[in-house]
Length: 227
Image 1 (tube, rainbow, N blue to C red):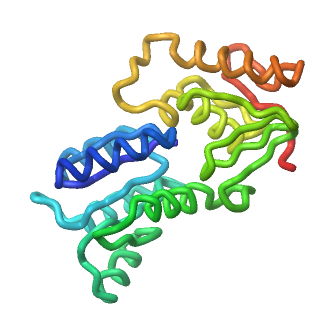
Image 2 (cartoon, rainbow, N blue to C red):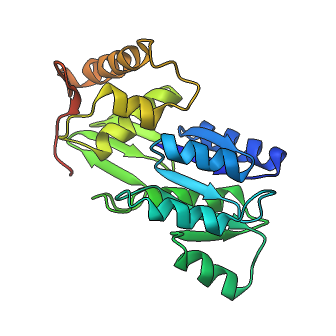
């Protein structure tokens, strides 16, 4: 899942980005409103952490701009700000935010809110999901196939999580590049194909069958039903 961190405090933005990246998310950063708007206009983010007090813009205006585009479902918006008055929270939610986190905050709370927002409109309950024999818990960062635990790289974990959220659907390589990799990924490399191949091999080694189907000319599909 791909996240845009909008935060003018560079050290804080970098810390948030590093923490989210360790959790398997693809993360881009914007330290001002102009950059945030540019990135939001061209990249299909799943979630935005949005500071309200930017040097050249107001986060509420960016939220309104994003919602005015009419993209459905559009990225989730987590407003992160020092403004802690009830009126501020109400205004932020009315402007299109999905949740509101007041500074200073504990990073584990941010992670929990991010997980909660990203699982909205999905059939998953809590941080765990299961498709056929494949079980994944995003909070505990564990994956298993049946009773067999799986050791995945950070990118393989993120790829599997995205495929499980879209189980049964054909997901194109372009979609995977947009949602599992950040803006520094080279679209002209075979990074998606190689990562899918490595993940498929690990799943086949423990399950004995291919659970990720390659649909020629279209993309990939994870086979299985939610448990």
